Amino acid sequence: MRLRHIRGAEEKIAQSPYVIQDPEGERGHWNQRFGNAHPIEIEVGMGKGRFIMELAKRYPDRNFIGIERYSSVLLRGLEKREQLELSNIWFLCVDAKDLAEIFEAGEISKIYLNFSDPWPKDRHAKRRLTSPEFMGIYRQILIEGGIVEFKTDNRELFQYSLESIPVSGWEIASQTYDLHHSPLAEGNVMTEYEAKFAAEGKPICKLVAQKPKGMQAE
Image (cartoon, rainbow, N blue to C red):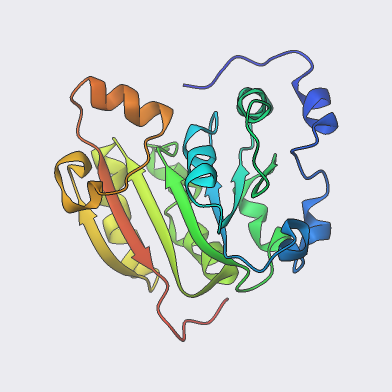
C-alpha cells in the first residue's frame, strides 16, 4: 500500500541534501560522488528506507543508493535519514526503467528488490521488477558475477520470478519459500513490510540470482 500524496513532497525532495537531483550526470562517476572505490549496492523500490539505511550503518565499507519513484514515500525515508550520521548513502527519485541511463556498465555490484509491486495481471507482466525486461536492465549495470536479491510475500510473484529469471539467462544461486526458517536468514535485514509480515507469521520468499560471468549487456 502506498502513502497518500504529501503536499509539497516534490519540492522538499528537490531541496534535500541527501537526494541526487541530476543522477544521469553521475553516470560512470558514482565512486567520485562517494569519494571512494567501495562497491556500490542499490535498492530498487526502497519504500521508507529502513532496509537500505540499516545496511549503510552495518557496512561502512560499501556504498548504497536507495531508489524510490514515489515522492511521498521517499520523503518519509528522508525524514529518517536526517536522524543518522552516514556518509555512504544517497537517494534517487527515479523510475527503475531508467537505471541504464543513470549507471554505467559494471558500476553496480548488487541490487536489492524487496516486496515489489506484484502487478498480478498478465498484461502488466513487463512491469514486474523480475521480468526479463528489467533483468536486462540489471544485466547492463551490474559487474560480472553481480547479484540480485529478491524478497517477497507474494507466492505467485515468487514463482513467476523463479521461472522468468533463468529464462533471462541468469543463475538462481539460492532460494527459499520461508526465509526466516532457512539458512538465508543469517544476517538478514528486514524491511518495514517484512517486519509486519513476520509478526503475523507470514512466510517470506527469497531468491538470490547471479549474473553469469561473460554475460554481455544488451
